[in-house]
Length: 331
Ligand code: FAQ
Image (tube, protein in one colour):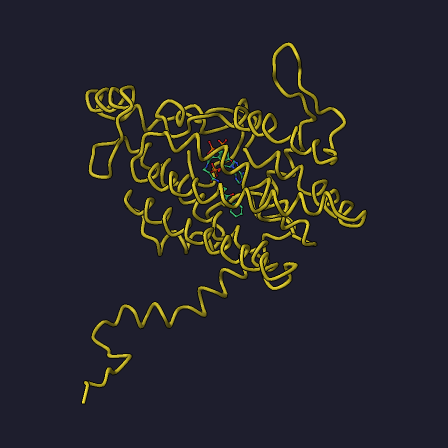
């Protein structure tokens, strides 16, 4: 089950695996066990291909849609330095989408088809970018904590099995680390600023906490795809492991800044070392990823507009025989 299958009833039944040639499947799994990279021309199970297309495509869409909530803050960012830094960050996110679309294309789905599936609502992208960035503080929380969450997940997966994806992730993680530093600096400025600035960043944190908890995906016991993705080393950490790692790394930093997390039950169990927290509202998560979040319609409308407005450029690029620019020979 992939693409649109989000019943959250536990692991999907993977009939496709049962249909594979047992000898080829065994050889493939031996390569995975030996930590070899799988490359586009290598034999791979159909389900491995389909799962990678689904996941990489959703990731690519998340990067371009992810550019939107922060992108609207470029002109309103306080000061020239912040404007420049945010512009560079947003540009990086769009670049990440390009890398990821290229990685997904190696598996046989064209970029045109992926973009079409995004704008007609067939493909998913990250829940988190369907929430509004009301204030400058929202933009700083995205740059710090959403990027932090993205790094936790992507650093793990960059040790995975599919060559083109892990190579793209390695580069993406390096760039995301700069985003994180930029975001942290911007949050520290607000958290150590005037009472109004502190209240503004606390407000933003309160708004983004639930979407952040959702960001790592449903709990492992509800996750449809984790089992097979972990078996084939595409996902190198489960959803719950990533969520725990994020809490471990960032809750102390949030507290250090004198900010509070809007969850009275959040604490680390001294015996297990695990964070205990209030389960975020998973019904809200399902609504948001299925198109009914606060900004889904707006986000897709912007992408549709970009697609329509850019059509003439793509047409012009395809018509290689047409001279669009005449170069005058030197006299
Ligand atoms: N949002 O069975 P699982 C970024 C869906 S990049 C939406 O657990 P899986 C950079 C899932 O697709 C952020 N949908 O799924 C940036 C499935 O539905 P389907 C994106 C979600 O694949 C920063 C269903 O729920 N990162 O932020 C989400 O094993 C700042 C069942 O779930 C990636 O894409 C969600 N959060 O695990 C940009 C990383 N979670 O397809 C700008 C790669 C789950 O059956 C500013 N992806 N669903 O219809 C992954 O690691 C995995 O796909 C997970 C989900 C962990 C996201």
